[in-house]
Amino acid sequence: MKKTLALLICAMLSASALAGCGGDGGSSSSGTTSGDASTSSSTSSSTEETGVTMSAPGEFPIVEETMEFNITTVQTNYVLDANTNDFTTWYEDLTNIHINYEQIPDSAISEKVSLILASNELPDAFLYCSLTASDIVNYGAQGVFLDLAPMIDEYGYYIPEAFDEEMMASMTAPDGGLYCLANINECYHCMYSGRAWINQTWLDNLGLEYPETTEDLYNVLKAFKEQDANGNGDPNDEIPMIGDDTGWNGKVWDFLMQSFVYNDYSSRIALDENGQINFVANTEAWRDGLRYIRQLIEEGLIDPVSLTQTDAQAQTIAGNPDSIDVGVVTGATWWSELGADLADPLQRSRQYVGLSPLEGPDGVRNVLTSEGGLTTGQFAITNQCENPEVLFRWADGCFSYDATLVSSYGLEGTGWNQPEEGALGINGEPALYDSVTWEDTTTVQNWSMSNIALSNRTNEFRLGDAVDMSDPDVEFTNSELRLYNETSKYFEPYRSDAQVPSLLMTAEESSERSLIETQIQDYVLEQSVNFLAGNLDLDADWDAYVAEFDNLQLDRYLELMQTAYDRQYGSAN
Image (cartoon, rainbow, N blue to C red; front, side, top):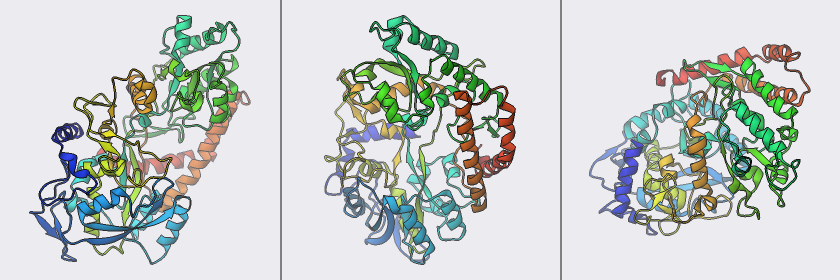
């Protein structure tokens, strides 16, 4: 359906159907603002409680006379004012719904929202307010947050198109209510972010093949260490492999463990083909992985500082401005440890390509897989809202293509333009738009509501941004293009179905789970590093390590997770 929608969008773009998204708001009684935002109101409905007349689902304006709602949201450091933002005024013109935003500074959002929820003075809705799973379940059960499932059935148009069955399940509370909408932001390369990067120039210098197995990697790292891989005449200044303990997926051992067992980098649980949740950090496969990584450290093939250093410290080594000294780095992005290409006089990142997860001795080969692109806890309507169906229609319209485009980039001519004829997007498909400004979260602006407004930023949408493929240097100046290319070639082919999806639990379950999970995660991190550093012996100390999980209530933890998973996803699987 998404591919079909993308093709339809492309056709409509070529016909200039998006021209109505300009500075005048584009609201017109004679046409549409784009291919999916109909302004016809020939069919209408009214809520039984209030008698408010609305247009048919999916049509704009939603109401004939302007209505107002109060929404609490976050005040970020990159959107000047949600009340005067270009998207806000454009969407009001389209819907005839005016939003009064109460904005809370990002640093205080959790505390302030908790105080508001504890009071009797609630807004009509919360948007992007860091609502937790416990908030959603608790206040939904109490009736403070309204169940949106009946509204989706009766009034939904864009939401049913955007969310598949499993996505709906991920938003459904234990009592069956759907109290809070998620946001869709399918960052393609983020879905496979457990990555490493290998110096292809070094492989070429030494006449080495690209490593495919753990044994291959061992041999490559050994050659990097002993054979003057960087060609400077000094065979002793190369560091074969390095990582860090603080960066985005920078741990060397997290990456290498994927060759032995599926490793989710945090909870150490994996979903099998029968829907059973299993713990992996007490298995023989986990011990085999630790043993392999320990050998690499002992032989000087992995710099031992990788176990404890920060990503900034790693960059001072791997990003040495005077020479290129490292063969393999780990991290979701190459610049985490190599530094930015444009700021590097040696432009070292151009020597590196993605290092696929290696095939282990038992044929295991996984990449960290976080598919779905859902950000939960984004939009909840409260019981203080007098016309919840109208406000739901407003939220539903945010998932339309037009609203997603304007909330992400702003108005046509400000944040995006029509792509040139024949232009291709990041994914090599016909471009959907040509962004003028990326989704900038580093400078203050007031033309978009990226990462605040509800939106349907699918892979097709995000990868539809036009790229100048005629520029021979484009892959090194457009990081999104390079991340797409590297991910699709080296990492997505090893995607896994073992990642446990997000779970909504009751208050009691969530509290119990959180305490046990924190203890288990801390223990696995501490003891795995101790094994790798040689402070613990993988033979003499292993049984004691495994036995401690009984004291940490591992069985109860898995029971809580399994119960929640079966309840939430049983019908979807």
